Each structure stands twice: as structure tokens, then as C-alpha cells.
Length: 101
Image 1 (cartoon, helix red, strand yellow):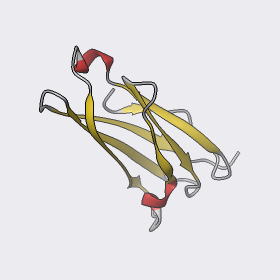
Image 2 (cartoon, rainbow, N blue to C red; image 1 turned 180 degrees about the vertical axis):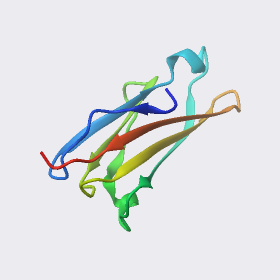
Image 3 (cartoon, rainbow, N blue to C red; image 1 turned 30 degrees about the vertical axis):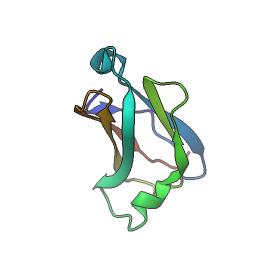
């Protein structure tokens, strides 16, 4: 789950990205969740604005968020931090390249 590179998206696309925490959660559930988006390669002052709306957590333990925009040629890191019902903190990341189709 950490460091996976997703299929590139076009800046015009809006996609749903999900991270599967089933192997880590066990019998616990998600108490709080935070998503962030940052540039790993390239320049985009509006990287955080790529996260559209609120997370779609109805399909737990796969936590999802809509992602939009992005700058052609940039590589973004999407990071999810979950606090569990048992008090643990779990972190998952994926990399999302943006390329104009």
C-alpha cells in the first residue's frame, strides 16, 4: 500500500482513488481519517486542491477520495492517515502521475 504508483491521470480527469487498509485494521474500525496531496516531482502550488470534496469512507476498509486537476508532468503523493478505534495510527501512500493524454 505504501509507494504504489497509480496509472497516470489526465489533468482534465476526475478519478476516485482508494487505499485498502483491510490487512492492517483487523477487527478495529476507522475513528478519524486525514487525506493530503503533495507534489513529489514538479511544481504545483495548488496540489492540496486536487482532493475534491470529502473522503468517501462508506466502503471501509478501502478508503476513497475524489482527485481532480493536477499539472502535466508532476508526480503527486496521496497520503492517508487513519486513527483506529483501538488508538493506533496507520499511514498509507500512493503516487499519482499526471500526464496530458
